[in-house]
Image (cartoon, rainbow, N blue to C red):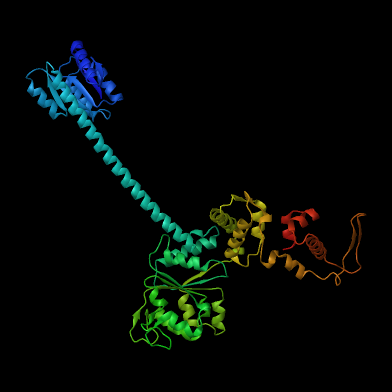
Length: 489
C-alpha cells in the first residue's frame, strides 16, 4: 500500500520508512508538511501518517487541509501524538482522523494500525465501486428501456407510415397542423379526400396518434371490400340468432372494436346509401344497436372517413347523403397529389431510397441530379405509393452508389414505350421526310407534317432495332437516356 509519512524529525521519519518497507508497503517521506500537502493533492495515498507537532504546519491543520482536498479526502490519516496527549488524539479523531499512535511508536502497534487501514480502504473502495456500478447499471437500464420505448414508437410510426410524412410544401404543412389539431378533438369526425396513393391512411393515423403515440385501437374498415349484405353486421355487430349462419354468441362490430380509439372508414363513398343514416345517428347520438340487438351501446371512438371520389359531386347526384357529408366535413382534409408537391419529391425519394437500401442491403447512397429532374417531371398518377414502388424496384434490381436515370423504370403510361408505339401515327398514313444520312440529303413531303411525329417515329424504330433497350437506343441516337425518356413522355 502506498503510504505518505510526514514528520519534521528526520530520525523518526527514517525509522517509520524502514518498518513500513519491511512490512511490504511503499512509503514516501516528507519533512516539510507543506510539500507533503501539495504532493497529496496531486497523487492519491490510501494512508497518510503525520506527526502532530511540526513548526510550520501542525498535524491537526494538515488533517483539515487533507480532508478538504478532493484527492485525499478518502485517505486514512493516522496522527502521531506525544505520550499521554489524549485530548489532541480525541480532537484529531473528531476532525476525521482514522487512528492515532503514541510516541515512542511500537512497531507492532504500527503494523496493526496499517493493516486495519488497508482493510478499511479495501472495503471503502469495494463499496464505492458497488455504488458506482449500481448507478451505472441503473442508468444503463433506464437508457436501454428509454431507447427500447423510443425504438418501438419509431417502428410503430414507420410501420403506420407516420414517420414518412414529408411536409416541405406549405399545403402539407397545413394538413399536418390540422391533423394534429383534430387529434385533440376525438368527438370531431374527419373526412380525408385525395387521389389514390396520396397517403390518406397515413394522415388518418396521424390524426389518431398525434405527434407521439396513442395506445388506443385504430380499426380500419375498407367499405369497398365488403358485400352490401354483410356491411351492417360488419359495422354494427350482431346478436346471436340475428340471421342464419350467425355465431352462437353474436359478434362485436367495428364500432365496438374501436373502443376509445379511431374507426377509419376507407373508401367511404362505397358505403351503402341505406346505411348512411344509421352512421349519421351514431355520429350525432354516440349510441348504436347491434343487428338484432335490444341493448343500446355507447360509441366513444373517433370516426375518420376517406376516399378518392368527389363526395360533393356524389351528393349533388344523390349518391351520398348530404347531411352525412356535412357532418363528416367538420374536420376536412384534402390531400394534394404528388405532382403538386414538387418540393417534396426529392425528399421522399431519398427517404424511400434509404429505407429500401437498409432492407435489401444495397449500396445506394444518393440520387443523381438528372434522376431527380426526371422524377419531378413525371406526372405521378399513382402518387406517393407509385414513387415508393419505383424506388423499391430500382433498389431491388440494381446495386450502385448513385441512383441514376437508367435505374428507373416507370410502369405508368407517361413513360412507357408501349404508349409511344400505340400513340404514334402509322407510317403508311402520315407524311414523313426522306432522309439520306450519308449524303445529308433531306427531301420534305408536299403535305404538312409534325416534326414531333418524325422524332417519335425515329425513336420507335431505334427502340425496335435494339429490342426495347433504352440505353442502346439512346447511344445509337447520340442522346442521353434521360433525353430519350423526355422525348417519349
